[in-house]
Image (cartoon, rainbow, N blue to C red; front, side):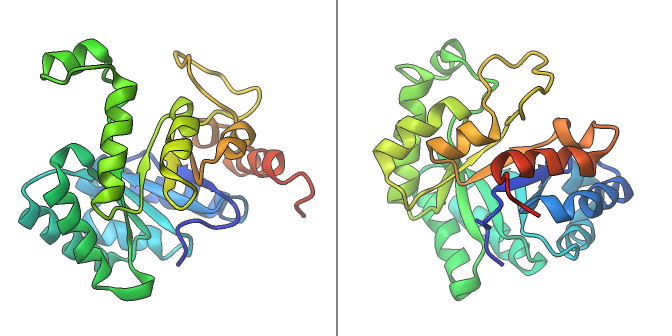
Amino acid sequence: MSPAPANPVFCALDTVDLRQALDWGRAVKPFVGGLKIGLEFFNANGPEGVKAVVALGLPVFADLKLHDIPNTVAGGVRGIMPLGVAILNIHASGGPAMMRAAADEARKAGSKRMKIIGVTVLTSLDDQDLHATGVAGNAEDQVLRLARLAKDSGLDGVVCAAHEIAPLRATLGRDFMLVVPGIRPVGADLRDQKRVMTPFEARALGADILVVGRPVTAASDPAAAARTIRDELFPHAA
C-alpha cells in the first residue's frame, strides 16, 4: 500500500464512533487517496477499530504521535505494524535515538513497510510556549531543526503546517515526505484559522499528503465535499 497515492488527500476521520468513521470512509473512498485516524479513535476502538478502517481499502495514516524511550517506541511501532496502517507519526522531540529505533523497527517489514514521520512543533504552541520549555529561538527555527534531525535519523518525513511547506522543501529536498493538516478547500469556512491553504496551493508548494477533516466530514454530503476537493486538484477527473 503506497502512502503517497496520486490523489494526495487523506480524509481525517475525527470521531470515536467506529460506525460513523466507517460511514465517512465509505462515502469519501472514491474521491480521496487515504484516511487518517487519531489518538481518540484508537483509544476508543483499539486495534480492531484500526483494522476495520484499513479494511476499507485505502492507505491509513495513524496519527498517534508516539513519544517515549527508544525501546518503548520501537515496541509501539512493532505492535502497530500488523494492523496494516501505511503511515505512523512520532514526536521528533523524542530525539535521534528514539527516531532511529522507530525507523529501524519499521524497516524490518521490508519494501512494504509502514512509513514513519515526525511531529516537529505542535500548531498549538507559539514562541512563548517554546521558550517556557527551554527552547531558544522561534517556532519556525525549531521546526526546521527538528525536521533536519528527523531526516538524519532515518524518518520518511514530517507533519508540517501549510506555511512551513516551502522552507522545509527547500531545506530537505524532494525525497522527504511532507504531510500537511488543516487544509481548507476554496470557499470553506476558515473558523479561527488564519494561516491556511487550499489543496491546490499546498500541492503546488510541494506537499505530499493533504489532511482534510471538517470541511468534508461536517458537510451535509461528505462524498460531494470530497469530490469537490478532488476536482479542484484534478479538474479533468472522471
